Length: 247
Image (cartoon, rainbow, N blue to C red; front, top):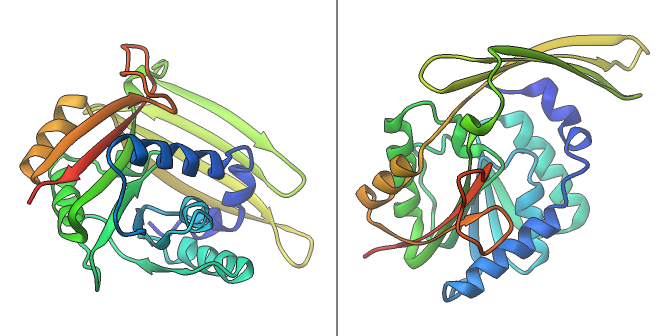
């Protein structure tokens, strides 16, 4: 899905996220597991490029990849304004090709949860393996959606001077979490334009992640509760994985 309307206000919605802190945590994980020889990186499901640009500020030559051309357009504009090196490409993370291998691949903030089948996960991991240099690291997170309250459905509203968003969430069969977003954003004429987008995420088990990484010829170096160096406990909502390309 394009998420064209959401791209206009995505950074305002995510204003509370400190992407430089995310980049710092990534650097901590890299240091813990032997570092990345080449400071080249690919950020999957990059959205408007905030994580990619935070890595660029730390000296990485970063490429951001996203399925939405609207998100990519915003990311390119931000990079140009900041004068940061890197590029952005519209592509499907399940099947993509880079012109040159990179030393690091990242995927954060539920990006992989949008893969709605085990086959999608496997295809993505094989594509990541092809994109990495020998010894390159794959660092990503998985949102443990199954840890969220599951009343069946819920409705929430977010309002600001710039937009109004209504979220209707439903837990479906096969561990799917559907979020229908109805939004109202201002137009140049002072009126509001209505849009509706549907997001679907899947609860992905640790055993599925490990099996897919092994099949794609990765060695798992670490599993961590988010933003720590502790192993993920039963209550952990978000798990970070670090894997290295094998062969």
